Amino acid sequence: MKTLLTCLILTIATTTCFSQNNAFFGIKTGATLSNFRGNSEADQNNLGLDYLFGVSGEFPLNEKLSLLINLNYHRKSATRKLKGYQLGIYNYNDGSFSNENIKVKSTILYLSIPIVLKYKFGEEKSYFINGGGFIDFLNNTEAKIDGKKVEDNSRQLFQSIDFGTVLGIGKSFKSPNGNQLTLELRNQLGLINISRIEASKVLTNSWIFSMEYQFKIKAKEVSKN
Image (tube, rainbow, N blue to C red; front, side):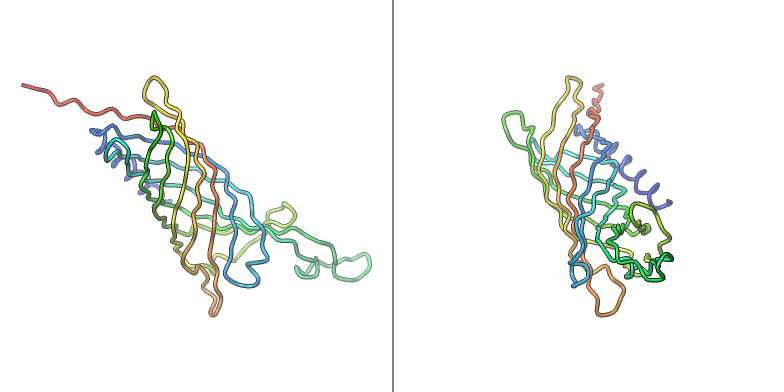
């Protein structure tokens, strides 16, 4: 929580410092489709639907290029169907372990800081592409079986940091007051092994569709004596 508050304060402070260049402060929410990869077990997972939310600061470098920094609470999930006996579920009716297919959802919760360069194009420069990197700080883990949250102790199995690349494309809709609504499709591809288990490799991959409302922080006027 202290890390989250510190990063939030730094994001707001940095945006304020850059306000002489018409910076933007944004509030973001979105849906995520994530998966884990890197070993035979992880490769059997399916994409998991979840969400993220956060804030951002956008700092123009010139007419087309800007620096964009996000601070997000990012949930990376994957799903898989397992037999009941694989989970140790016992059928008391016939004295055997269950053979039913059961949906398992595994989630890793991160404090995510993507930093990208944003290039705007089009007649009104309302379209954009961006690219850069992200660093994620592990917050916690969760597990659900058939939609019900269960006790999970897997946090200790993962490294405290994830790192990778960011690529995105989107469009902004400007309002008369200078604020704007932004829609974006982004991919965050993990490049490092997040597993603490020896001889095991786990990497992340997350697709994000987000909506963000950005408040324009107007440039400060320099008074003339």
